[in-house]
Image (cartoon, rainbow, N blue to C red; front, side, top):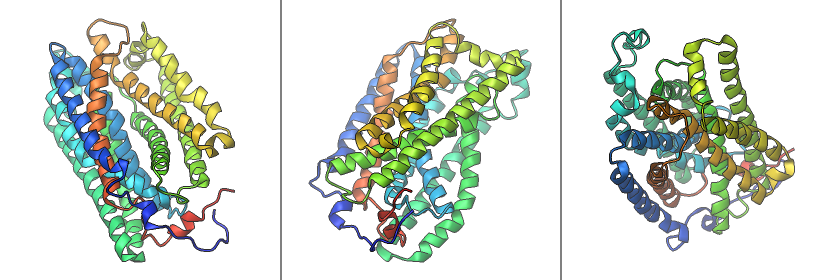
Length: 406
């Protein structure tokens, strides 16, 4: 909440990255590194295309979650008319405008469909897959993907364009317009993220299904997004920007949401596991069995410990969340665990289908991470450089600047 302080303003030099600033060079550097990573990934594909495409999909899922998380954050702030978050909302807006680029980064997934999804050529006599052909077929799969990306891009660009226009006009009507569109956007977002997770990640093992798998991916997305928003603000402030704009109070709230949504992720993950374990239906339990064999068991144990137990007790403290160094440690840890989660969700089918039972990192996991991550960071940093780092035209900016936790 905010108290009766005098209205505060922001100085232009604190919210605009100057041309000579070190961060102004980041888009070009990240783009070059990303292109090198993508080139190295294709060069290393060789005789193991299955590993290339699974590594690509793992890192695609990881970085896509930031774009989707940014879109969700922006929509929710408008739906709830939140005031505290305005100073960090532009960072989320910059995240969501990376979504059109992911439509291009999805091309290798399309190229590798035959290696990733064995429902593309179902075996004769496979009753389960034959029954799902109406949904799991190449034409409908590609049509749905196009629908998701077009919708995400249109909503992201609409909210972004209106927000930056308000920087100049200071028109309160723009905020009312965005609040009117936000409820439609949140429904569209919920449905498309859910079915996108079904299509791209759950259908890697098409005999298995979970009605809350989309919520599971969403929960990980929110955790990663809050972690990245906090780290982004810290990096900018280390560069001499956002002085007195993003305060300890805002970091405290980002830390609280990071903690809360990590508990939510745990609740969804446990609910999915517990219901399948209790029902004990072979078609459902096989998905977990792959992840309990060989060294995958250690990955599963590490995920449970590292994605819940450790951060639960670490992030619980108010002092941890209000100290930027300790919050940064927690945020970096959660980003690492989100990647482990995507690895755990996506990669076991390869080991299973090729008769293996062990988890092993590939150099392609690294090169595709650098490639996709570099392109994502280039677009994100480019948007940060091109406009003000906070929505300076929002009529509730002063409220956000004066925000204090109870």
